[in-house]
Image 1 (cartoon, rainbow, N blue to C red):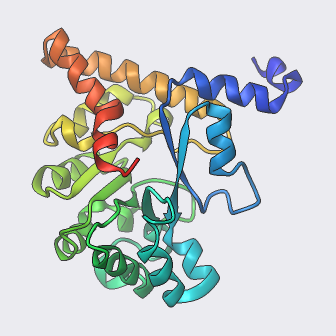
Image 2 (cartoon, helix red, strand yellow):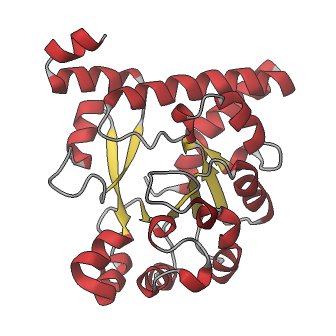
Length: 260
């Protein structure tokens, strides 16, 4: 496989893996890799043979233009074709309300002021070396979730706080979560799905990969998510019910949540 990768055309190789996932719509963080440093969301959609939509990273806007630029871009985000917003506060300050940057709160306020708030993705749980893991516990988000009740929040990644994220999705109507990055990187994907669904209903769990730069991760995430769902759901549901639940997690929940 590695030898084939070395000699294959990079675009053709990436396209073959992306198309093998059966993805219908890609949601792409517009802040990573930094603009100009990787494949942008439009080209990614072309390679995958599917629709692609950008997600506005709040920190990217703040670094380029400050808090007023954040307010303006967030207020116009839906009109400009963004499917959602994203913050990496877990990396910068942690998720405690008193630590979060003013520009992030300004973004949330501008988003709700539109009267039709876009979903806000929040990095939670593990990531790169520069993250302080205890401050990335999604449980810290409780005051923020209650303050912005009209905002749909999507908790990303979540490991090792999968149960905490599931509890928040269980308790709050405006919270969803995924296991991106967790699957494919954590070695027991089935156990993570079980933990996610201990409290949260299937209507609150979303498929996602967090794949970037490495095309194999798109394929492996899709493959291992499907396998984990097939194992876990059929243990507790009938075959028809399991298929319905899997379709919700893999497609329908996101289709209902995001403005495609």
